[in-house]
Image (cartoon, rainbow, N blue to C red; front, side):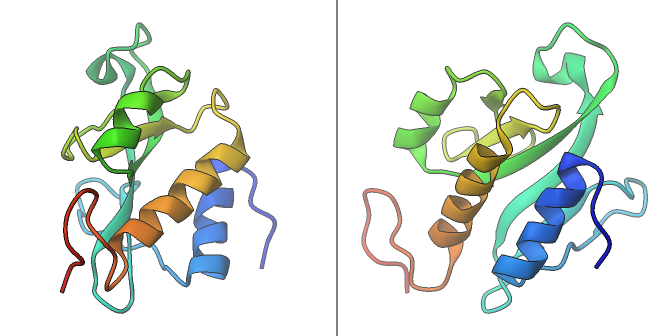
Length: 134
């Protein structure tokens, strides 16, 4: 496997190697968008997007790579104060957050949150504050 050069490529490679998730490009109009899902239940656990910074409340108009991950409502609220973490774009804002893939958030933290999202959406995972999902 080639050495990935961008943070997005490194995160995608990590997901493929360690989580067994292949990127699924669902929208022909947006070829840089990709969804990562569980192979067992097809649930989304991460979404790679490229959006104008102004749509995220940033002052920069150029497009930025982001990763939406699920984290649950309790953690989402506490994460939003961390530089590089924003309310989710096009996902449920109480359960998902955006991770900026611009270097403002350490790669290790992105991996940790990706793994958490994977765990929260796997078959048999408990919903935050609720009964075990069947």
